[in-house]
Image (spheres, rainbow, N blue to C red):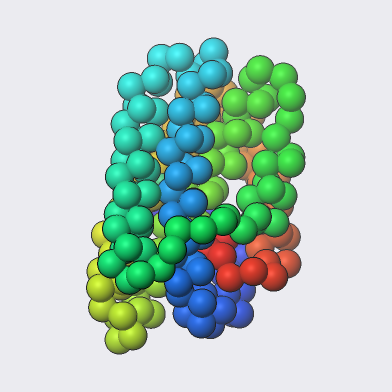
Length: 190
Ligand SMILES: [Fe+2]
Ligand SMILES: [Fe+2]
């Protein structure tokens, strides 16, 4: 179902496992940003008819945010500052201006972020099973929801302009592959 052209780099998992508390703080911010992003998409004329659907995604992301905050509290990890993600800012830098171009690019970026989350949560759920069963179950419980968000954003883009979505998806999948190979200096999910 996921269309990615490049695998998650081999050094991603060991780095995440070695810095789980920092990664959980980063994850909390990721869910917070996912909630605000769903609300921000409601500014586009082409998505006025999707306002209920986008609100539902925002509510779900806010629930995820709360769940990560509960985990942080239970583990005595303080909520802290977010790390910037070169991968996310690299994707977002390529969002074009112009009402229709912008909404399609923005939706595709959101879809890829949700898709990579879905993929990485699946890996974490499997790899943490022996190390941290609670966290493994938690990540497993988020996989379906993030996969649904990935599909929902792609469908929204296709409903605006199917052919343009295909063209831009081709561009963004190459960009994702190029950016993900570069990795990040900090212990973050993306
Ligand atoms: Fe989420
Ligand atoms: Fe999501």
